[in-house]
Length: 297
Image 1 (tube, one colour):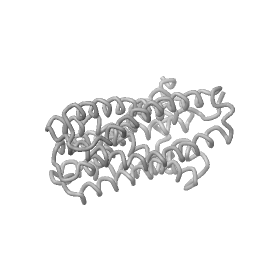
Image 2 (tube, helix red, strand yellow):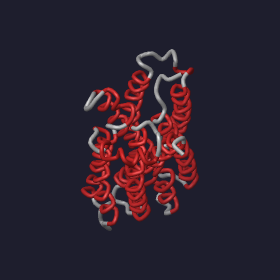
Image 3 (cartoon, helix red, strand yellow):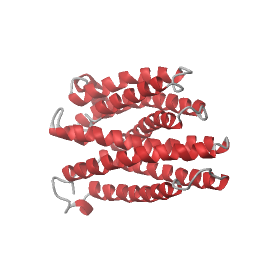
Image 4 (cartoon, rainbow, N blue to C red):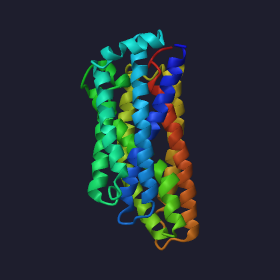
């Protein structure tokens, strides 16, 4: 049974990452839509589902953290170690981040919460605080408490949540809703706001990603293809490059002048959906990467 712990950690991390980027994406998409109410109901439902998922997944991750700290010996040892884990830097961070989730869930039930900028910004603030505490876990915490590496991880998580969450929710919820309602010009304006924000997020993703990769390989990229961590990183980078390619196609399409036609809206909806699927693959690879020991042959 203890051999299941590594698989459980990867699965829990993947689902958790998808949940928090979806929450961030729902809030950011609502901000980019502007005064339109199209898709509000689905975005609120997405935020609610992501909040519930996180409320359930974080206790699982806390238990798995306990298991890793006792060497994945047994379920009983992991359970008994939980009080001790709660006193650690990573354990406290997980507990505090879990306490933020009921507030996010409550926000999703308030009917007017996402129709006002203040409500949306409050939700974004809660997600940012959640990511701040999440950056205190994993490889970033190996250098100590409140280090530069954790700060870089925080920036990386925020930029990833903006890019991947924004694209995933745009491709699966917002773009289809706007296209179905025949708001073609509004879809184009939404896409331009999305593109402008993601351009900034991408610059941060690249800078912090290079730093994290360099630190993960101990300051050398020579062993990159020879370790499980390095090979998973290369797989993740391949999906990132594919997503960037699709993003460039969308950006080129957005240069088309208004008014937009049904054909342009359909193309953008399809391309965003494809990019959303690629971003989910990136998130799964990231979760796997976070649960592999860097530099181990």
